[in-house]
Amino acid sequence: MAQTPTHLTPETLGEFRSAALAEAQAAATPAEVEALRARLLGRKGQVRDIFALLGQAAPEQRPLLGQLLNALRQELEAALVAKPAAAPAAPPRPVFDFSLPGRLPPRGRLHPINETIEAVKDIFKRLGFEVAVGPEVELDYYNFEALNIPRDHPSRDSFDTFFLHDDVLLRSQTSTVQVRVMESRKPPIRVIAPGKVYRPDTVDATHGFLFHQLEGLVVDEGVTMADLKYVLLEFARGLYGKDIRMRFRPSFFPFTEPSVEVDISCFVCGGKGCSVCKKAGWIEILGAGMVDPNVFRYVGYDAERYTGFAFGMGVERVTMRRLNLNDMRLFLENDLRFLRQF
Image (cartoon, rainbow, N blue to C red; front, side, top):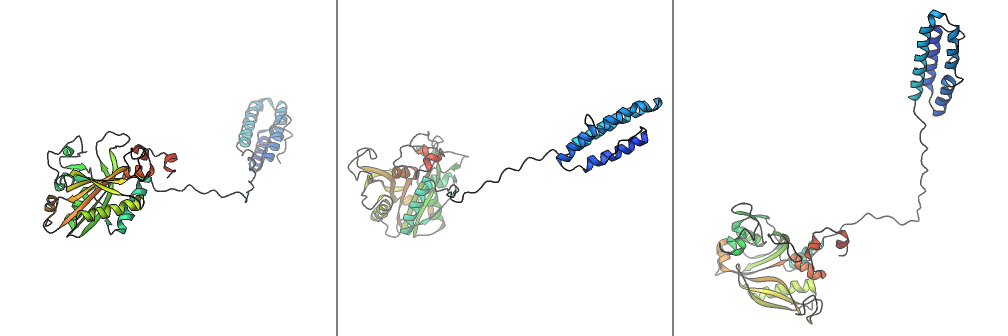
């Protein structure tokens, strides 16, 4: 412990300084620091007592001793301030209630669009189809030319297709995959091609600039319209129920001849007429037809030997009809309150 000197000289003051700073360095707890501060620097502390001795010193030493005393007081104050403050009290440990139910982490699930794609893929896989994919950035040849779509067709205008360059575009249909598959192999072929497609449509309840299609292709010897109807009827019954009925209506597509629009009996009212089918009793689900012989010539198939059929559907519209929705924009808003319903 630092002892208060009985007489004041630079030497006695230096001894007191060394002892006091050593005590300040050794103080480890907040209580020890506060006790040392009171003893050294308090109103009745040792430094105050040493200042009282200044009047007894020789007059010629008083200025030097006064400077040393002021420096000592500042040094001790700095040394004690630098010591750590009182540590905060540790919070009480919570008592775990083992009777509470566990907190499960949130679980994800398939988006309704992907769920529909997987359901349709499962149906066609059972019918012997395989899944084929292709690039979303395509050449004009695969998107139009090889599909028997003439140069003056409206869909080849820049207002109806996202052109990236003269002959490069974002595909507007997954029929491009059908052409690529036929180029890569010989019949028999039985494939479906799901994927994103792009068209510069104004976004509304039934249109979007990005949507999903799923198209199918069968090529072999002796394939007929009866095979097409059988496959599509099995698909419709697998997706909407075994009581579904189907009908074909004449239509036109450049890459199929003859072409048909395919309707199914309303799966809500059973064909009696309701708000879903707009009182018609029928709901259009896809377009289809027999592959035009001109398409076979582009890929080098013998049109006299082989026949085939193709079909295509918009996945968003199929999903809307499955879930009885009236606005396809709901699929892209990423509102979990909506998505968690399905």
